[in-house]
Amino acid sequence: MAQIRFIQQDGSEAVVNIDSGTSVMLAAIRNGVSGIDAECGGCLDCATCHVYVEEGASGVLAPPQPEELELLGSVAAPRKSNSRLSCQLKLPPSITSLTVHIPEAQS
Image (cartoon, rainbow, N blue to C red; front, side):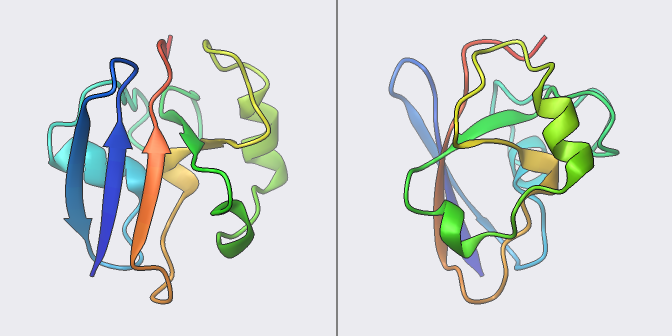
């Protein structure tokens, strides 16, 4: 089991536990974390589950695939080097915690 720490724009936080293999987006939706719209339900079709992965964690996560990179080009909030779509972030068993920052807008 892993912990995901969601940090909102105002600095408030929500910490949720997830099983490995569960997407960060699904963890947010199941636990009522605001700011993750996930309009397509995780089908890699809308870019409304955009998050900023805490610096340093990128090296332990699977890199974004071309489809994700393409959708990241249409996010509502500024795209950064650590931008990811949370529907594509699934934690391997080797990761026990991850912090993501939720951008100010999703659509």
